[in-house]
Image (cartoon, rainbow, N blue to C red):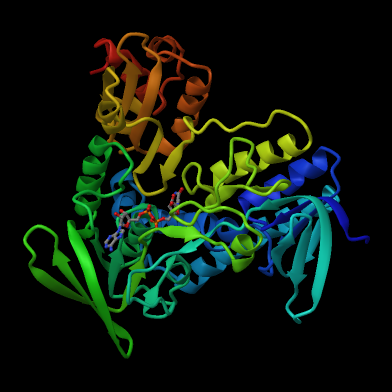
Length: 468
Ligand code: NAI
């Protein structure tokens, strides 16, 4: 192999590996550097994929325990074999990371094993496990190094008692007491998993509501549903410190309003207060500009402040930290490097929380529109009035469609309910085509499906739902 490439991608997560595949498809000689043993980044190894495996398995267990009897399915001796459940999760991870390896071979992408860093605008250094150094020349470099968990001041994540999502995906037994700091995506998905598997879960959230950034209507409905499922919440609460003694933790926190201090004892503490870009010293040394939040600054072509060095995914100052956003950026940056017109529409990036019920949104929330003085109209439809949801005993939640008051163009949709994560794709597509709520309302939706709830919410924008 000669060490000259058209493109060297640093990082093989959903942003990096997709950028590498698209670059190779476009005829560019491509290499991708990865320091993990397996490809796929956080998403495939310790994020989206293993968490979805545990969410799926624990949801089936919960349903078998709580709902099967009502359906006339009787079970005896139902129990969890956690090591088997973890084994199944690990198998999914291996299958999918091997899948990326196969795609690299198929597309003739050079997989450079080791830790990559930028030496200068056309050189990438790779140090492998045995500390051997190799340099590679690249006409273009794409930085796709992703993000790492953040912690709180004075709190050290040891992945034993105080864990990040990585530790919480591999507990060898369900903790009796689990304290989760942060009521965002990771906190709520993993609270659901461990609550279903038998833990007493308390979520401590700094704000007065959960899932900041999502529509407030959805957030308060979600809080009610999760509370009904037995998860406890301490809102408006700031963690002031955690004392670890042997295998137990004491979490101290103070109420932001009343200033009253409280403490909770637990076997495990999950810190899920956000993630920060995974950026090495090399980035600043070569002069790549970062913004105040320490994210790489890029323009609309994903160019950093250094010519020929591009950046995408969680490490940049654009869009949410989501795998599918990074994938779309990976495709766009490769096309831009190849002289095409790659583009990502940041106004239409769906977001999904894979709990039960699921929560999903695309576009603007009502709060954002209010803040920007944009006039809007709302159509809401509850799943309680959807026939399929009723048949399946999945009546929690609703669809909320927000359209421009004058033009009727759909500005945002939020859904809480079964299959919300799948249904949101229809709305993303509609918004990409500039649909009005009338367009959705006049699109025939199959009966009986949950998606009729979307059509009914669109009808409700002009106050004419049929079934409510
Ligand atoms: P997040 O930003 O979703 O939530 C963090 C939460 O912690 C917020 O509610 C915040 O108010 C709270 N918080 C911050 N400081 C706090 C403090 N000192 N005390 C108490 N609460 C505090 O971050 P999270 O859940 O860690 O997820 C990280 C990233 O991973 C997110 O950007 C998310 O987009 C992504 N992710 C996406 C998933 C999905 O698409 N389903 C699943 C998991 C993660």
